[in-house]
Length: 149
Image (cartoon, rainbow, N blue to C red; front, side, top):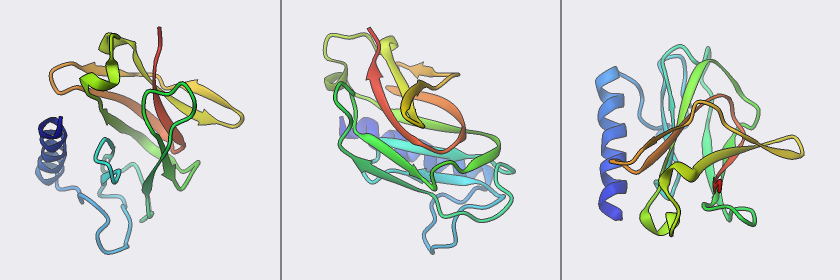
């Protein structure tokens, strides 16, 4: 499903250029008050930070590691862990039919590691056409996708 991922990345890039946001931290300066987008190395998870969500430049990374047992995706460690935002940011995951198996896309849900447990992220949205799952965040943490049956 490389074309869906490529289209997803292109859409993110186009939307950030249209809004005047920095796309990626290419020079090590971080993302600041103007906002921007950080994309995981595998291209499946993107964090969209709107203008005004941060007061100062922060280096934000998304590290991809093997997911916990029972997860439908890898684990995305978004750092600096615990960083809070002044406005909600949007985390978007690009899923595919292989990940779903026999499940319906509506069964997908994002969970974040909080202290010693996992918590469902609120405000989740599925876009069947683009095959994306999105949720709002106010603080950074490790996130994975599960199939909630």
